[in-house]
Each structure stands twice: as C-alpha cells, then as structure tokens.
Image (tube, rainbow, N blue to C red):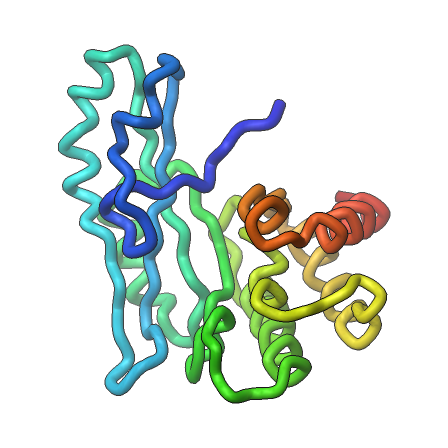
Length: 207
C-alpha cells in the first residue's frame, strides 16, 4: 500500500495548507509531519519549531468529521541537538518521525550559494550519512536526493557518491528506517532517474 506520510500544514515554515483540505475524501486517518529545524544556518543560528499545539487543538473537530489526526514531525539533522529533540519528543505524541538533511550548519543545500556543485553535493552526502549513522529514533528517511535538487546532475555522475549512498541505504535498512519515495522530487525537481537508481540500489541491498 502506498500512502503519504510526508505532509505539511500551516504550522510548518514551508506550508500554508489548511489541514481540512486534506480530509475532503474522508480518510480514516491523517498525519502531518511539519518541519522542525533546530540550529538552522544564520548568525545567530535559528531554531524553527512548529506550533504543534495549534494542530492538536483541531483533533476533536477532525474526529467529528470522521478523521483521526495523527501527529508527526520532519526533523532536519544538525549536530548536538539530541537533548533538545528528546525534550520536544517527550512533550508530543508523535506517531511518525521523518529524518532529513537540509543543511550542513553553514548553508542550506537548496541555497544558491557561490560554492562549486560537486563540493555542495559532497557535503550533502556526508551530512546524510552522518544523520542516518547518528540518529536512531526515526521511522522514515526523507528525500535522499535533496542535496542534488538544484543542480544539473545526471545519474551517470553518481560514481563519487555511490559508496556513501550505499552506506546510507545499508544503515537505514539495518535500523528499519523506511526509504521515502518523494513525489515532489520526482515531478517538480525532475529526479525520476535518480530515484530509479536509488530504489533499485536500496532493494538490491536488502531493503
């Protein structure tokens, strides 16, 4: 069964969506994984924390319409934030935790910074591998292609990153973390071929 667990609502920095738009077809459950980003690049570094309580306030109204709200979260990897995450995780009943790598502490991987393409991609793959190695309490790895999105990149160029991406896949398989097929990556960012490669490799490694 395919179903979407990577959805954002108006409490997420990257969305203005009304939660009630998602239940027009009467789903039994709906889960929002709004975007939590601690220590985002900047001077000083910025913590972006969704107002999860606002979403939970809608739980009863959603239930009256026949849909149960399940709370989720998408967390951007950063070093040294485990204590803060543990505190947030203890406060809210998260049913789905998505792990992602959006930045390296100095710049975001979707930023149009004056850094060579290969250097940016190399940093992204290193950060992604570090994230899956260091973090355990997660259910899904989001958009493995994130650091490739803004670049003109062909699958035939995957060689310098292949060994580390293999290790990413092996690690999430070992930790029973799901591999996300991200529709925005495929249809908006044009990374269908990269996903074909990634899915085939993930399956070949035992996923």
